[in-house]
Length: 215
Image (cartoon, rainbow, N blue to C red):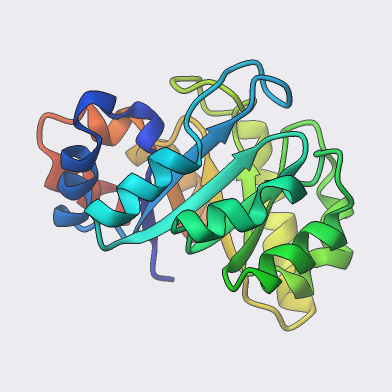
């Protein structure tokens, strides 16, 4: 299994966003994870379409946009136009999931869906054929720097097995408390995309940290 790395820009120095993004891609990142928070679905507020648009102009990398917002339908086209390559929304958002998936497809970008730690992964089974990526949160969404929730590992395995049974191969992404040790646990459980924030942006030797995640 080839492991993909998606550094979470939430952990970067926002005064140097373009430089930080370029540093990650130069070190071998496969995509860049952009956390969008609305202060309602989650208590924090982060960045929006104008920041994404500036980032798109500054860097040639896959932009992995994670919408932690209550009403993703209102903003799908805006984020697609701003430069998202993949848009992930939450099953727990207030909009109907099939409608959001159709809107993302219509916008011409890849579709991802995410679940919070307390959500039963079974709810995603009918949606697996329509998604390019499944994001399993291994922390409560909304804040960086939280500890990895190891009790989410069976959820990763469950979704990988369910996709295999349906003959599907969506990317399974894990976000929250990822470092070399927890990343290995997630990959062994069936994940193939690792989102890492402080582990990468705070690394003294970034290439070595990136290589440790891949191994």
